Image 1 (cartoon, helix red, strand yellow):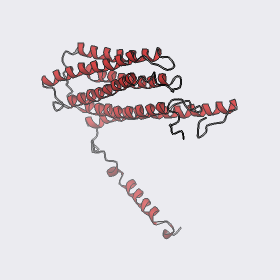
Image 2 (tube, each protein chain N blue to C red):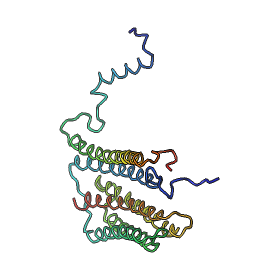
Image 3 (cartoon, rainbow over the protein chains, first blue to last red):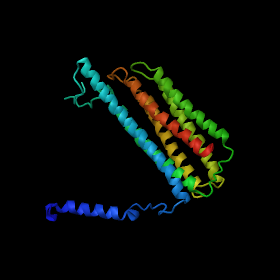
Image 4 (spheres, each protein chain N blue to C red):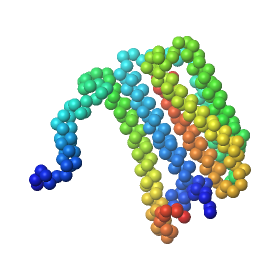
Length: 90
Length: 196
């Protein structure tokens, strides 16, 4: 494939992506600890992220549970012979 | 032309939920993320702090009183829902919950005033700043819950004609869900600041 075959925007994106991969240490630098290993802050940030991930997990589980409930109710309605989920819900 | 919004009172027959139930679920999810961010900040600051000292003094009586008031408000809302008929919910119990919420706020204000006068202000330390942030935001939520209970009691959601059976109870359950969340946040505050 010739270089000119790629759309200009895609080329730009590829270039930016390559730069990010090449400069990982800069792009991933944490503004809290600036890469300082074994510092109190870098040790503390792990459980803090864990707390946030836990909260996100609870919310995601709730959304998943609701989706599962809808799927179950839809299945039940099909079995019962009533119309499945409709725009009016009636 | 019927301009009423559907599924406000009666649940959608296919999903089985009302607009209010979806709304409160989304609201509580956002609240969880909000307080989660605060707890994450607390975790980061506490673990990385060279020293973590917050002297809340001998406030055992105030803390126990505040906890009991919150629990009593929950119980009052639960009883109002339990004793509700198809079209009415006990306005006295809902008003009682609002009063208990107000009493909680009075206890907390007294508590915070004493701490402030003793020299513990948000700028004293990171721990003090977080304490005021947590308790202040929780107090705002308690105030909101109290106003909601008062609204349900005063508006007499109950007696309004034209509401389908069960809608009153459903409104009460939304309030109870919110109040349970407020209780859980208080338990979190107890654990993070008073018991640890």
